[in-house]
Image (cartoon, rainbow, N blue to C red; front, side, top):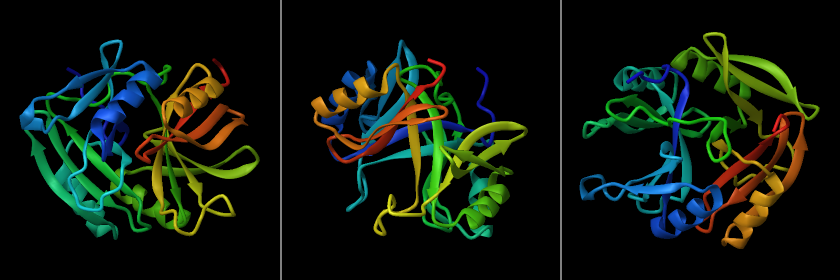
Length: 254
């Protein structure tokens, strides 16, 4: 088994207040199959696309914890990353711990307040499929501190922040070892309510953005931002029935 490249987003999962209903919603929206683990894993569910791991979901464990998607960055050493996070001004939310033989994980807050996690692969390497309809295609940090975030993630993962643009607006592209791996957007303007915290947005690829947005709504979700054209394709921001926010992206090359 080949392990994912350290420093690259490798997995996303959903912590939800209603795992059965979230499973209903996402399996119908993306055509995923739900692979439910045993009691020793708390019913953690791996969503598979044509048999390959695409994403995961599990129940909420912390009181007051909101339903939300999480981004995991691959690492060879979760403990070393935890030390780097603290040294760079971030916060360790969940110290590194073993998930049986599956791997080792930890959860953090960056200095601006955006949560993220790391995954040190064991028998479970992360996602097996990317960039096809129903699979993860992009991870994007939205933050009110672009400069500070560039310094933080550069220190923790060795990422390089490159200035770019998206739809005529400034945009940051994260590069790692010469490869483009993620993005960063400044939370400036009226599109970003004051009570919306910095976060990592995840994008799933779809065949047709408009159809996916309409289907999500028919399944009990909400269209938070209607389908919109960008140079890279057409996207929409959606909420699942429990309030978990994610995006769908129809590639311009589709």
